[in-house]
Amino acid sequence: MTLLKTVDPKFFQSEIPYKPMGKYVHFLTVRITESYPLFQTDSELNKARVRAGVKDKTTISRLSMFKRKQSTPERLVGRELLRNYGLMTAEECEYNVSFAMDNPDCIIYGFAIGDSGSEKSKVVVDTAFSITSFDESHETFTLNAPYENGTMASKGENGSKPGEVTSRINQQDHIRPQVFFPSIVTLKDPTEASFLYVFNNILRTRHYGAQTTRTGRVRNELVGIIFADGEITSNLRWTQAIYDQMKANNSLNAPDPLDEDEVITAAKNAIEVLMSDEFIVHTDFIGDAFVPLLNEIKTLTGSEAGIKSILQKADAEAKEYANKHISKKKPAAKAK
Image (tube, rainbow, N blue to C red; front, side):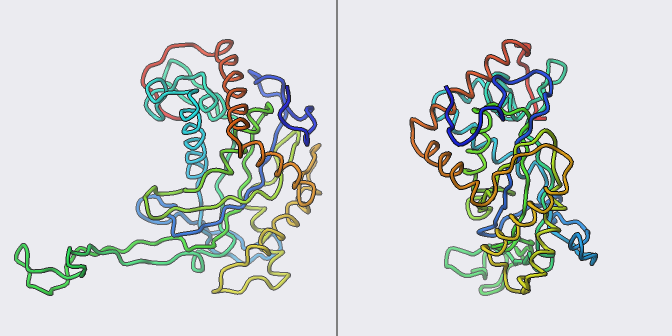
């Protein structure tokens, strides 16, 4: 029984195939920071020196959001739901420790267990880049440790003089709120259930980067879905095309943050132009065409019965695939 009425079943596989079969679905996502997240390696924010636009050949530095910074939080949200609805336990499948190898997370997002087996991820995520330059998109904070009296100065403990400022001060670059990272998440050979599982994970995930209780808030805005028989343009080219559109519309008003409505409009227009140059067969759900599908999925995932039906169907498909194609040895494992 199909769960969706707004999408032709021909875009989905009837079961998870063992070998690539040439069906792709691309989730067009704009990730919007809503606090001060950290996407960093070795204590420095990740950045890349690239061209500003496709047409604008100026070179700028952009913040980078590496692929694991995107996919890991999303798959952890999915694992949380599987545990919540009794389809997986922490004992049988622990992320980066031991994988059960037969649930939707393992089969869709992949795993590797040394010589005992592996499953390649069917979710393809590449590095995303900020639309605005590094200088406009980050801020340096000075961090220090307050004492119980509410001050940043010592009270004379450990040989220091009362009122003396402590040396426990550190500086850390953070990404500013309202920085936009266009990102295309690709699912290979989707079944209807795996499509809904990945879609729901993207919609639900709210924190990315260095995980703390006080930062990392990011909102995902999906601007469309593309079904195709191949891969489409890169995150970088989409970002550069958006930059060109916004520059042409005089929407880049540094140091002010970008207007979200203008970003979303430019993102839709840019991807439509880029898709017109592709040499693949594709069906696009962008703009008004995307609204009925998005509403149907939000209604489905917004009820307990709906989300359980998605998870149960995805779990049944994963277990069927595992029984056919995956060995049952289960030593300690690491993510792939």
